[in-house]
Image 1 (cartoon, one colour):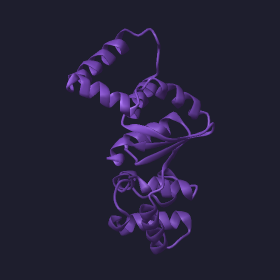
Image 2: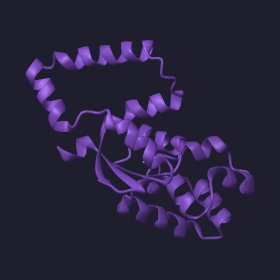
Image 3: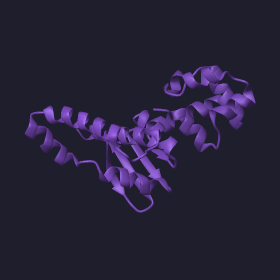
Image 4: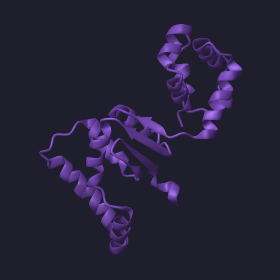
Length: 178
């Protein structure tokens, strides 16, 4: 998981701000985005600490605590949602104006029970046929969708809705239920 960006976001900061303030190489920060906190280099910890006016030890402890807490990824925009989906966060909370759009996208998906019946009834071959039909339908569809919407729809298939309200949706990876 990308706890570095979550940590920076909680502290109203970003990798760009750390780079601009300390001059640390952006690629070095990028290499640390999916590392465990205990594997962060001293240089990266010092740069983050300098930017946030904290000690490197304090930064390390706070990121480690965040890893143990395993908070859900929060998405307010399509690009944030796509990032969370691409990184396969265990749980994703969708908030804001995006809720209505995602509700619409997810209405077209079969429930887990329906999907299981579909797969069992066909001996598994229907899944391959359904994927081909989806690809052909998308090719000839008159509905103009942005690339980001198509990517989100594809990646949403591995998630299921855990909780839903008018102002938020909690998604969970399907594989966590097995």
